[in-house]
Length: 174
Image (cartoon, rainbow, N blue to C red; front, side):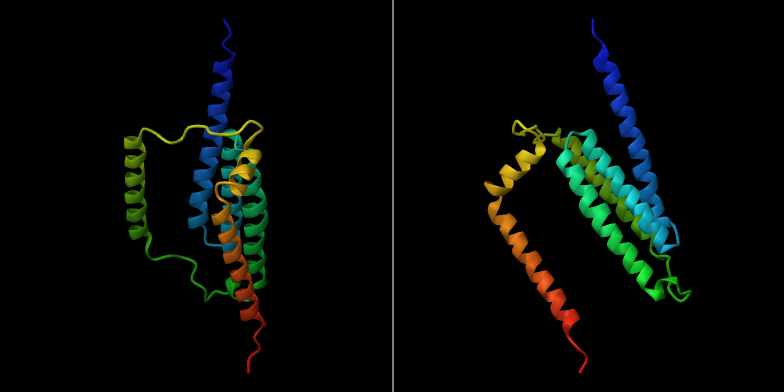
């Protein structure tokens, strides 16, 4: 008898649990450290662990997009904003939140509601409907056939936001 699938699944579960611990620890550190720079770096670690989840679950396209867009783009933008802002290092800027307990209550309620929803759904609707050839081909096919209208609307909204940002920055004080 071939029991190689058992060892493969144990390794997969071990890797998943390792990245889960890294994700939870880094997410906790994002909201608990006092330095904005350290918080941004822990956010990058969290986003990398989310990309690892995508790779574990065979969603390679989403993992690569997670790394390129969020870790490569958003985190670099946050770090540049933090480094170029002199006020962040000032002692006048309060880097703590006084709403810790209300945030904890909201998070606990959200966790209970999401857990209840997942448990009563029986995970219906999560069937694997990928095309042969991998996730990138499936995502591309869906974006250009089924979801072409929302895709184009999103591009128009992003273009309008970019034009609006340029208009705001380009205005000179009169």
